[in-house]
Image (cartoon, rainbow over all chains, first blue to last red; front, top):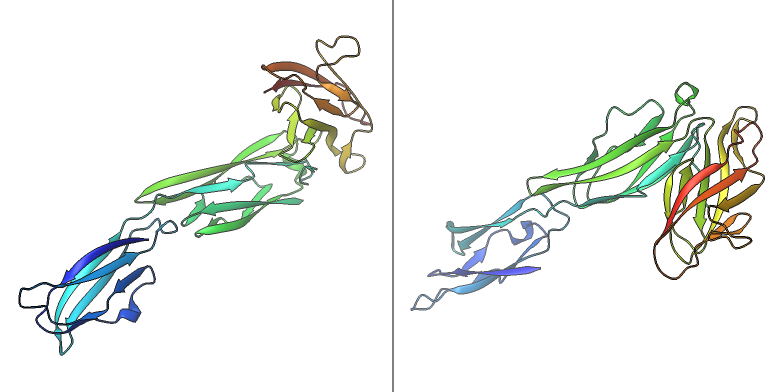
Length: 107
Length: 188
């Protein structure tokens, strides 16, 4: 698991659109926040991504944050995870058959 | 006809890239996804292709922009008159399958049970095991053989150093060539 932080700055309450539609490998917390203070300090949002060992292919997810009372006002963040290097093994490494096609007994 | 099951383990999609396969060999499935996949390798009873011992390498391949990975499995099929030995380590471990003039390596301090087989007996129609064995190694001194410890058992006892021996395995299989198997054995 790896966590990166993003900061949401808004002058009104905001929320993450469609959080239930996020892929399972991405978690976002919190899903909503209030207006930033007068000094423009935003809300820190943690984006957690699970390990991608079983995903050699690159994968992406889109996080869309919108004002609660006007969902046409949005900020979009793309989460990008590089694919893991593929690994493969096959066992046993050698198999042997007899001339008639029967496997060689190995016991 | 016989089959052997392999396990292909991959963290992504993979496919068998060895093709075409010889007529006597089938593999299923030829592609898979992340995780462990059981692959069945089937060898047909194909007399037309049984005159020579054949080797085929199955290549299982996974490729992504992040890289690629390859795993190989060697499939060996003995010819119909082949005589071979199986040396099975007592206590577990991979058996060693060897034919005449092969170089093999055994582990020090491990007993190996030795069996000899004829790959295919044209009269009986199936694989035949030797009824008797008589083994000896080069350099045997009197009754003290550096490797042979029983009629069907070898053992490397010395504590240190690398050893190499020539192991002669006389066998008794009706209709099989009477020549002993000669194996080059190293110990480490």
